[in-house]
Image (cartoon, rainbow, N blue to C red):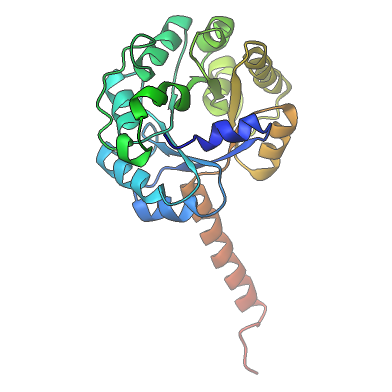
Length: 265
């Protein structure tokens, strides 16, 4: 089975830079896959992507070196097993609130006797390579999202779940869960209590011997998170990148026109 690039980088003690796809388009996925990311996540929860489109996006990224991940909509065995059969090398599952839910998540990702995953890797047996059934359990990664007050309260039992590879922090929802509407929506939290909560999750994960990932809104915060010790950081998604680049292009052009840069004299 083809090696998981994320696990290779972690073995070398290197952080993983993760891209994020919300636009349902294989060409967009192919473009991002060639920009130097270590992994890229297809978002089936908040993205505008359905399963069939996601399969095409996974196919479009195969020629690159990125590790393909999928965020599933919910803790649902059908969704989890389907994206693994389609070739995902890891699953990020939202709203994991208890150790029991974390154990349920793990079970859907592992073949018996370690779990309850049904065997039928329709695409994965080709995209990941031969011997998939025997090697998948050791190569696909299982991330539980910590993003609610309940999840934070049950942090210790979640991170100690056998078979869980890591926790993934959704900072916007975590802020809502811990502080309500006290602060604006957003990713890169600077409030002292939120930074403390984020670092608490990071420390708990590492103490339990698993990895920690953080969703970031920009390069500066992602670099800071790596400095804190995060093993994987997610950079802005395709929607934000497209919007930011488009806005910058239009704004710069209007400034140049206003300044007379286009005048021929």
